[in-house]
Image: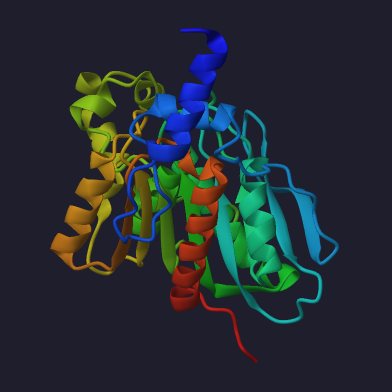
Length: 323
């Protein structure tokens, strides 16, 4: 088939029948396979979000605040809030992904800016990667960041009693570890403000790993590097690193997003999470997005959907004051 005819055929296919029907869920329509998604992006039919948006004049930015010093490097966080803020306000803490070995606290700038413009204080943070220190280092780091934020609440108009944690992929895993394991001894210590609580009011998990002891998980090199070895040699660590093992009925509400085309963290991880939350009676909302892959919120349609659903969730569990 001539190249031009092939492109026309693909373009027509993508426009006319590539999307999976919405089925009344309100979810953005997905794709039958990853190849069609790639072509849709290539042809400009699926728009991607601007991951480096400008900081609007209505938002104040505080960059590279050191919250913890480690042997490998100082760990930093960024804070954003509305310029006219003058009272304690709920804070949304975003934790980036990257298979526990890469990524940057600026990766979620789109979310940070957008939710700061809506009136929230937003925070992003760094943590030690698996090549710097193995589990439980990263979990301890994000808990230290949470405690630092609470201890400096007055400096940034933060309400220390209204905190949500949000993360994608490895960040989703760490967000769940924070939410489901407050005051767990193996994750405490090593902070300047250890006496401060690490409890939160809400958790948002975007395609994060829930159980690192599944056959799929223990075969992944990223999991081996995160834990520090093979499953058979570190079974207890793999279990301790699995958020599902800390879930109780008293856990904060969880908002979950996961795509059925995800090959990095299979959607059955989210399925077993909701099964466990249901079993113990912990509150949750699950958006199982048919036809979307890992990091699906890079697509503008999915990102807008996630932000809309997050806002509804935050309005319920970490609401902005109407005063």
